[in-house]
Image 1 (cartoon, rainbow, N blue to C red):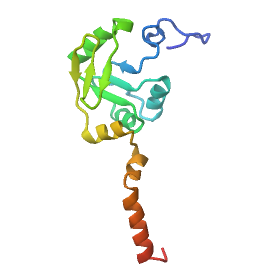
Image 2: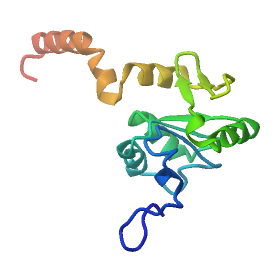
Image 3: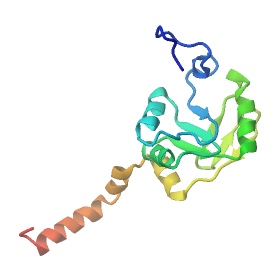
Image 4: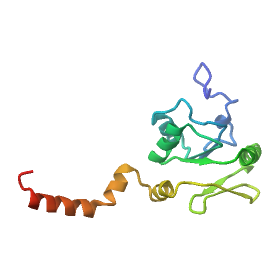
Length: 156
């Protein structure tokens, strides 16, 4: 959809329009990410530069893969999504910002929309933690266990 058959950019594709090039926040329709259960979908969005997707709902596997890869999926009400679509129709004047700490989407008119997020997932996003990073937070405990284990079971 982004490119024509000849490989040139399709000027009708929304992210190819000047006002939306370089966008980091994607406002999307219902059930975003359905059919995209592998990590490739969040990777592709991240590679494009998208850091947040806002929708009324997400496919479960896609939603969880977003958090595993540092892409913030935000669920909003249908009314809030319509407001965001209306804001987005203003083009370059429709800059949105996300304040994850405050759990707010701030619009170009100064208004804000609150959103919910699991506290653990929020902690991971704010601290750039994936499964490996979470494990490394426990490095001193792991090292202590390993040292104690070697002493107790030198044959292991």
